[in-house]
Structures are given as C-alpha cells and as structure tokens.
Length: 516
Image (cartoon, rainbow, N blue to C red; front, side):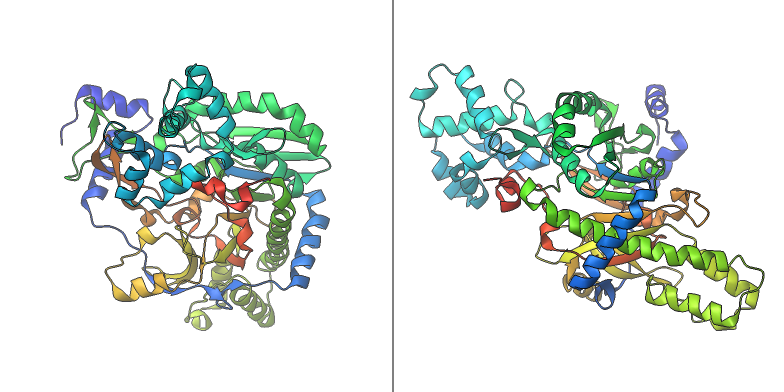
C-alpha cells in the first residue's frame, strides 16, 4: 500500500507513524475479534444487590471517610450533538413542502418519533430560544402556517445561520428548562458533584472535551461560575483534557483501502477507550465516572447522590480489605490460614476465579499469584435492570488462557451468529449505565499505571457513514470495556433513575429531564 509524501506528513503531524497505520490496516483486514461470553452476570452471581440498611451503611461509611480523601468527578464530554438530532436531520433532507404536508410525511414514514417531537415541542428546553430566533429571522412569523413554522423550527435548530445545534457539544446544549433559567448538562454535573463529590466546600471535576470545543466550555464556565458556586456554597476546581490526536485511527472503505476526504487521509477518534490515557493522569483516591448526557433535573438529585455514595462506600470498604491483605502478602512469613483467608476474600468479595491449579503451586508461587490478583485498580460499577436500552452489560467472560472474569461487554463485541453467545447476550438481566467509582492507588498510596491493565485484543471494528458513503473505523478497547479488563471488578445494582442518557432529542421529554 503506497502512501504519498504528503500522506506521511499528515500521519506524523498527528503524532502517529507509518508503522502504526500499517498495523491498523492489517487489523481491518483480519477477522473481527469477538468476546467469549461464559454467562451473564445476575443478582447473586456477579451482581450485588444492597438492602436498605446496607445502602445506608455504605453511604454513611463514604461520608465519614471522604474527608481525608481526594475525590474527582471524571466526565467524558467530547461528543457533539449530531447523533442526538439525527431524526431531524433526516426529516430536513427528505421532506419537500411543495409535495406533501408534514403529517403526510410522518404517516408515510410511520415516524412515531417525529410525531412525538412535533406534538410535544413546547416541552423542549430550547423551545423559547428557537422561537425567539425564528421571530427575529422572520418578521412575518405570525403569518406562517403551522407546517411552515414547524419546518422553520427544525431549520433553526440545525442550520449554521440559526442556532447550529448540530455542531455544538452535547454538554453545552440546553437540557433542562427551570422557571427562571435554562441549564446545560455541563452545568447539571456541577450541581450533582456538590451532592457527593465535595469536601469542605470544594469539589474537583475533570471533563474530557474535543480540542475544538475547549474554549466554549471555558467560556460557559466563566459565565456561570459565580451563580453555581453561590447556589451550592461550593468552590469548584475544573480541569479539562482532550483525546490526543495520536490515539486517532485511519478510516478505511469497505475494501479496506484508506478512506479519503478531499483527497486527504481521513482519521477518526478511536472511541472512548482512548480516554484511559486521560484517566491515567488523574491524581485522586476516588474517581466518579459518568457520561455528560446522563443528568437529571434538580428534584431527583437526592436519589442520584445516595446511590453514588453507596457505590463509593462499597469501593472504600473493599479497598480497606485489599490494602490489609496486600500488606500481609509482603510479610516475611504468611500462614496457611492467612492464604486461605485471602483466597476466600478474592473469591467472595472481588469475584476472582482462582486457578484450579492453585493448591498445587509451591508456596512462593502462591504468594506471587495472590499478589498479581490483589494489586490491581478497583472499579465498582452500578448496573440497572434491563429495560431494553442499548448499551453494554455485565457478563462473565472467558479469556484465551481460560480465565473467567467479570467484564462490561457491548453487543458489537459478541458474535451473535453463534447461538449460545446470542442466547447469553439476550438473556442478560442488567445493563451498564456508566455509573462507575474507581480506586486507582495501591496500599502504598502509589497510583497504578492504568495502561498496564488494558486488554489490547478487545478492540472492535464498526461501520459508519460519512457524506452518504460507508466506511470502517477501529474502536480501541472501551474505557469501561477492554481498557479496564484487568481491573478488579464489582457490580452493584442501582435504581433505574440513575440512568437518564439523552441519545435522541426526544429523550429530553422524559420525566427526569422535565423540571415542571
């Protein structure tokens, strides 16, 4: 495969090398790398269900311990809102007002979602902003027919000459309409952080953003800082990072040839798995991870905070035991009773399947084996009952070496042509809302190098569309999938109210996004 001099310059300008690009193309040409599901994780078999008293105990434990800890809320926020408005973009490109009414278009396409959008349009948080924009742009606005107003409303949302929401970061879009103001998802994360991630009136938050959008986030923060800090009586310390260009991947066409846009090689971000590098730079004892679009209006914050604190309490209690046993394993003499106690803890509390050959190991190798299992980052992941939402789920996964471990798996990682694999996938009782609390330090207070705990084989290839043409892109091991494959993992059932993503514009109509 020949690359021109300008191609190579482009590759190197991103911090990549020709060797890396050739490996990426070789990966595209290979077969899809599927996960081998052993079983779905369920209550009592990989998922912990807390009683009311346990919930209170873990919550109180976290509240008591956090005063001596450094806590950070980590929020992936690099996504633009383009997918959120896909429904409207398709409507705008296909609808011809000269040939049909909007109702006839909806009926012809059997679009329940578009019907819902138009009949509930006044409940959208940006409704008033859009109408104001329309009235300024159209002096004879009051003379327009209903169809003309609806069409102009969609144009005002999407087009560059109007509000241009397609190209605005999702985190900076109007999400919630309160009595006297409209709030963005970015702003809601600040109010949420005060409820569980603040210590002595201070809270630290880190947002991963697109480099092109960094200035917009900083400008927004400058405009709301005084208001948010006054309302919460909290000082916020915000930091930002972006996905490095050297984690990008070359897109290819369906024949695995480099995809070009205006004769230039086309690169795409390699998925949220690349953010493990960003997470690796965070210095904290407890890290809360949650996506930018998963927020609620203020009246539900108490329930969210309670659940988050409980997850953190589970993490800290486990970590207390982990640190205790890690120190024992460094002792000169360790009794057989202590070894059995550690094995029991790893099995019962950290869901680690101990090798069937363990009893045959020499004493020294038993100690080394237990050290390798216990000296790892820990993640406690909230899981909600499966209600048919898209996304990953909790499963027991069998690795190539035969080891079985708890993992979060996306449907695209499973070979659904195999009936047993498809059955396990379809029978999952829970799914992943990205509600994670992490402990990334060892018993000595040293931060783990998180890159050492990635399973590089858990990449997957996805098909996208760019300007009507299909292309393939490579997704690196996901941040909470393969990038955390070798962490110690605990799954805990959390209430469905903790899962409120906004994947489409109509998701803003759900009750957790309606203040009134």
